[in-house]
Image (cartoon, rainbow, N blue to C red; front, side, top):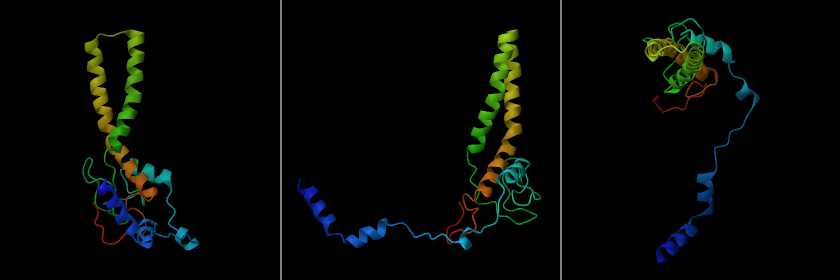
Length: 165
């Protein structure tokens, strides 16, 4: 009980201004000049990323390898290092491929009832091929989405002194 009272006494001794100073958020004042930024069209940047092109100009390549995003656009110089696609493209590919393969498998099973070996010979390669075919375009679309919405360092005012992860 004595420890609790000592801690409570210590908290009471804190200056109220110190508590308010550490808990108050930074003042962000909106102005027309601050709101006037480069227009970024969401759908065109998604489409450009889906095609593996730079989300800004649509000319430079987005990928230098199968799933390795290039450091910058060769045409307009946009820095791609702030992107954070992480696992989202894989999750989206799982959802898309699942929505294609599962209804097809159910329809074929209910209408024709083929042997299990034949089903495995069809659905497993189909799932793998669709997944590999969609993984790079979906990752490009995610990078395009991040650029269009100014996420993860694609904004105009990147804080100084914080290196990209």
